[in-house]
Length: 308
Image 1 (tube, rainbow, N blue to C red):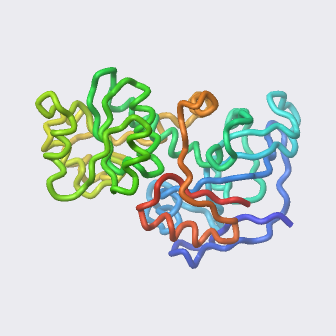
Image 2 (cartoon, helix red, strand yellow; image 1 turned 180 degrees about the horizontal axis):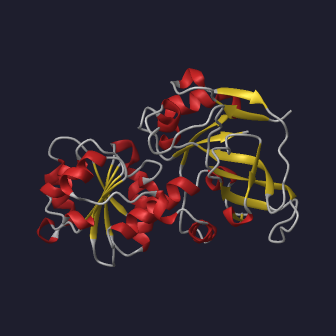
């Protein structure tokens, strides 16, 4: 029997189990995909812990996972866009990609170019569409200076690349170990910690002007953006919702761009070598607890990916 990650109650890592499940079938209008890689995301941990119950309640037993890449196993009646054997990148809103098989709508899939690695493809959707929304939320244009907190993380590393493609000067806040990667991807790396505002002003040049700020980390970075005199309508955070309520800054995440059209656009950038999804580490499906334990450290460079 195929395997899938399940949990029966809200809780910590110990509630996660890898179980035998019935093999899914492709019903009418659906596509069955054999999963080759599936990214994990902080939101999935928050849902499993019950922290998002009011907004995203779980029905038990619950599966988990949104991102994936894999090979089409079979298609249901009426599906013409894909056929068995096609290699695809996709997403599901059914909390089901942390598994050996997933059933999805065909419009949640796009073809995987041969030069896009499985691990990167499988980790793309949530982080990629979140980054896409962030860049558009702050209305970046050529010549702008934007600061990105958590610039080497799963979302931040994609924000950096999309902002550079938009023609902005990108200042990336990250630990020293990630400065070489940031510089190689067009950003000006700046270490976080005491004195960071002065370091940002120096990196910005031209009187220290900062036009926009994208916060992927939380912990006071919205306050830093305001200290740098960034207008609230050009500050976007994906995590500090208290700051959103207090300062009326933006909080656009993946929902604004969570669709197949944006996924295909991002995959196209990857195929052209204009976008890389850094993969920090991969884990087999049966080590899903270890994968989320690694995610909780919040210091990885890029994405953590499950390999069913």
